[in-house]
Image (cartoon, rainbow, N blue to C red; front, side):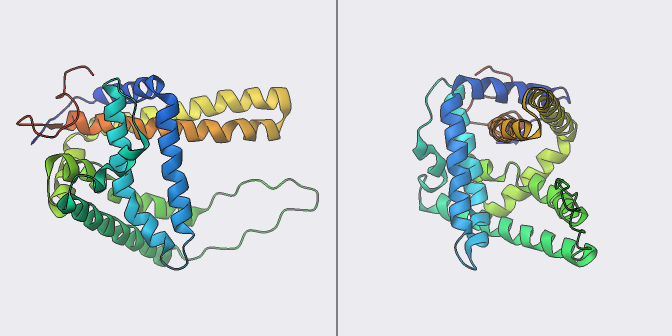
Length: 263
């Protein structure tokens, strides 16, 4: 396995590949994404330990969605069992993925703690006036905590795939992931901007149509499933950022073709 440096314009191709692959198997990939979301919601309801357990599942679930994308990119139907690919590859790799989950949970808790200490709880917003419709409030504390999570997400971006498909130890996978994101930062930046533009563009069009034909309630009812489908497409595109950022030096377990080849 070696790092592959790609031009910034590759970020747009990652988005296109994700959307195109999702449209090949929309029901399967959307269903798997919703299964993952449902599992996280159920686990998070466990008293005390629920949120911690849900955080530990994030790397394994990310790998499962990437494995499903690899199957769909090859023209195969991804079965539900692909979501637990991280725990079907042997005891050693399953243990490594759990370690990765512990590291992710610890990093997430640390980022949340730092954000809470620096920003505090913040003022309690005043209730809306009688008869006025409640509008979503921008929570600066939440935005700040999410910003602190950004470096964590980049460090873990490729880590689950490196652990699973290349047998890289958890701590080393974090280092390699961070280096890959840094060296391919231009492509990732274009990738992120393209997805942001896609979310905003689709959201504007659909919300405008909903407002014209049914008012605010219709616009909201249309936007919710649309946003979820866009997030599912985004999760599909993550596989291609990994596939093109690393080259397999042999024919072992890397699921997709080397960078530069078509799927």
